[in-house]
Image (cartoon, rainbow, N blue to C red; front, side, top):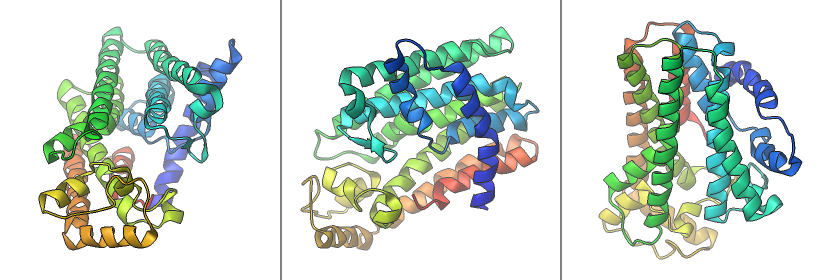
Length: 323
């Protein structure tokens, strides 16, 4: 099923790749646009534009009519990655040197800002009713603000000894899931959905986006390094207040390596075993599944179609993947 899903996504996102070439050409100053296109051209799953396209298709629209919106959402996603890497001091992204490593921090900030502003310029050029375009602009603008709020919360968590579960959920929703919500809602709006149905699409995206991030936390503790693409248990050593850690601390679990920056494989495995014995790892996995299932229910109001089925498969993919 997963390979079929990926194939169906690629059938749509290949159009997004072509549109990016047309809508964000490398022009003067050349290095600015090279830096802006660097991560975008490196690939990624393109899940957010796929959700947007499928939402519109499920309502009877075609790919071409929503391509600028799909490109806009993908550019916003990459804008967040460029700036995140600067703030987190991460030197590698998608197996390559991060933008700030190749072009310096100032260059990376400008590249991210360019992606952000171009996203709105491209979205404004979509061929649709002015009222719908304005609604989409409003959705994307509010989403960008919420992403910044979520990132600020995440940074604030790094300075604290403890974080509450409701705080974590708010942070994850704003930092990660709101862009999935925006993609689904914008696709629905452009596809002609009623306000009520567009909101159902938004809730679908929000809920599966939260499940996606929770499952990321689960994978950090359970997936092999060769699959994960990073050090197993890195969240532990970095002192990240994931929901697994929040739940474990609430249960009184003590972990000496939390936030220490480095640890031996034996120490990491011992810590992961403690988290597993406390039930914290399984708790987060089950909660991620619950969020995704709640998200799928939001599409019950949508008539059955191959596109609806693909959206439901994307929801399942959030908790079926191993990386």
